[in-house]
Image (cartoon, rainbow, N blue to C red):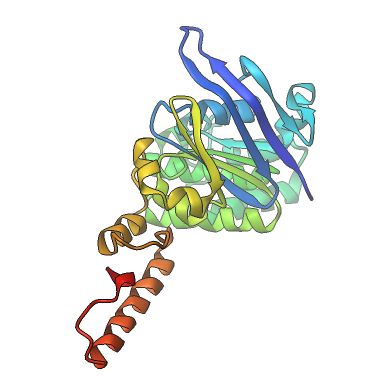
Length: 290
């Protein structure tokens, strides 16, 4: 399914006069993950709420396949799932099971189909044993997994995630990454707001770099995340692969790799080239490796 969700010239001013967003444009396409990357206060969470239809922009509009989402509020809410930065903000039911079942039951699921979907969602995030527990008695990490299970059970077409790694441990982040890979493969539109360039490098196809409510850059993830100076100017720490490569090869004309496997491959190639030069008895280090 080819779909397009886009924010056009979106601005937002809070009641106290704070300008959170100024003429921002964002596009989300089916089968890709888009990262809204920026430091605290950059406007990324506000933009995510606007994309979800939970905030109305002060100016500009959000369109789904050319149609304003404001004109299809009920239908859009049914196809959109959002994960808040604080999982406690969306855990409302008396038990974990009921909470995860809430969204799919509102979509009309019931009986064995609902039971199966909730059971599988809890299993995928590794919290089946918490089914009968109150969401308000969970640890922060457990609550984050349960909130993610709610999104999985809902199975929305549009998936919006606000700082999804903030409350997750390493196994939880791995579960999240698998979920995002599956969502892409199934043609879902995914947008995550984060200040974690490391995570964005692993999962994002495209990146919008935000600072002080404006867009500093928007391009393929490889282009934005390999530019250490650009990221630092926005207040975002570059991925570790970029920092390591830039330290080892400060004069390299190649773009730093943003993923770990790519960095390992380049380091292996550099070592092999150095060995070959050593074998040939050449003392001067090749300029490409300086």
